[in-house]
Image (tube, rainbow, N blue to C red; front, side, top):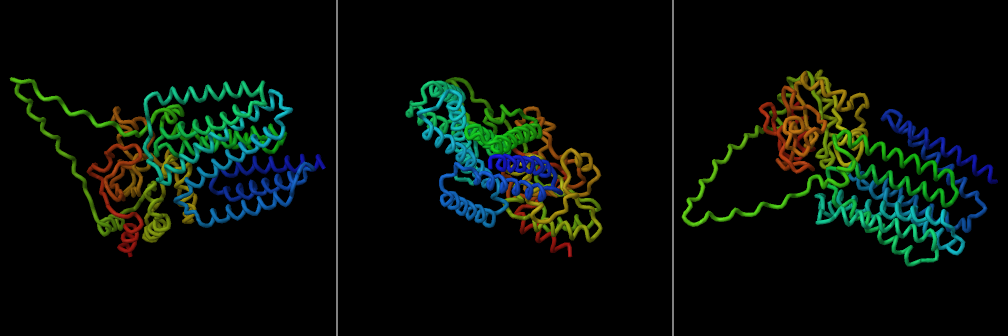
Length: 470
């Protein structure tokens, strides 16, 4: 029977590896999902063949409850809320690994030696950091707490002290496994550390955070695999952990920032207001206030005016952003694109790698609307085409199209690779207001002479544009 179990684990591991490979392309992503699901099914069946299973009834109860919750989430959670769900699932993965570590600790406490105790402790540390960090990410994405970074004096020093204290506790438990209070202290400090590590990260960096927490959940699963001597957990956890780290690095590269800057930079935090100036000393004349600089004008238009430009356009590039997700406008965008294509206009979609709130957010939304994959063009491949584009339609994107990334060395996003929509003959920007994006800075694009702002809900505005194109 052990040989059958190990063969099933081998087949499951191969399925995970192939599934991950296929997930790297939109055209093969569905096949990758099916392979991964099949591999997980094989792994579960193989595990249930283990003679150490205590109660099949209890396990089947868990399977049924988990399947019901998973089906409910899959059918009820909107695509716009997918980042929050991914954050929660990362947290659940961390919690599951921590529970495995805790169960093994109390089951084998009397016989634990240094190596298994260190493995258990690392599982608890990574699992609880993943759980609480993911919950904070969920709260920020769900707007149950502010998305701006929460910073306070000596924050990094306190976090370093907490992390060092977890290492001390792990070292102590390695030689004194019977110290149950120290074990619970480790659980508590790891949970606090997860909260404090994520609260100083702003909403604009959530795609990287979600990817990194996904990596943590994989590492926790791999650690629990060492506890249980389970090869499939070790392999699958390692795959998730390494893939998450690689993706996090790629996302950071897309923002021209380091991973340490994302984690410790407090990017997007609200600066304290400057103190009022002191009154001029007696006998001295007060300086005349400086003449305020004239505010740049914003050119705005109506959906009908936008449609008139579309009627004349030969080439159109659509740039989706988080505003499209909020308005749930992906299906309406596709309808507009089809109307343009019927009149002979070439339509493509420019995808920035960090647009939205999770890796591939825009790809997922447009795939839900059945937009052809070959029309989704990555930033590096399409940036040179904007100069020859008649109209670029920016839907709720902000920082990823801000020319300040190229022109203003003082800007916090300077050096960040952006979509060069400003080089198009005409740029239409669909937004509810002039409110800044995640970076909290003004967008130079909105004041360009070739930019036309169309204010309002993206979905309703695009519907009016499509109607006017008839």
